[in-house]
Image (tube, rainbow, N blue to C red; front, side, top):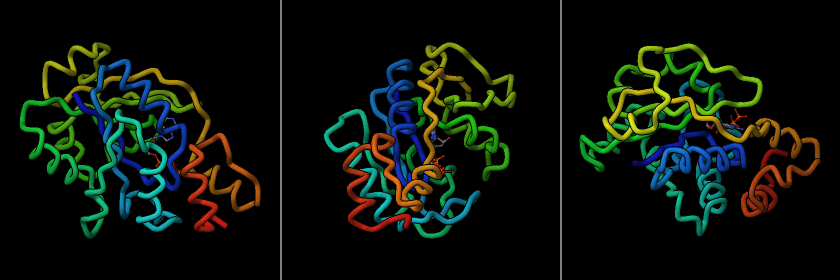
Length: 203
Ligand code: ATP
């Protein structure tokens, strides 16, 4: 079973990585695919160029076999729709392999407003990871399960709330620190921080 974590990763940080490891270990995910978004439909454009966000993701997980970096959204033009990404992934993994879309509870709150949410639930399960201070939004109750086994028994359509390490880290906070001339070290992997420095990002 495979996990997918999409994000702007502007920059990637330990709030993404540790929670993905928690989910992978709890659910027995063989792999977590990190998918940087090009042009997110629901928020401001990223501060850093796509190629550099991708380079930070690659640098952050280099040598870690749990993660695979997937740049398909950056190769596509136009808005980044998760639905399109899942459709193209389905074409690769086949109709029956379970896919788990990992997302923070803040992202899940906005999920009903995404492009074609019901179709997304035909393509993947959702694994919702609680962010500090965020309750689990009571959406799609009929799909909820507490049993990882149920995710294995069908390819898509269930929603599982996964307890994860509570890390109050956001990319916004990292960008603010850099902008104020302060160091964000230990909030993100050093190789990603080195790229922020080398490229002069977020100043
Ligand atoms: P920003 O502060 O720029 O909005 P972010 O830190 O929320 O960025 P994103 O790249 O937008 O990072 O997040 C990608 C995904 O990772 C989203 O589903 C988000 O909810 C989740 N996520 C981000 N940070 C955490 C965290 N600290 N704990 C759990 N999930 C997180």
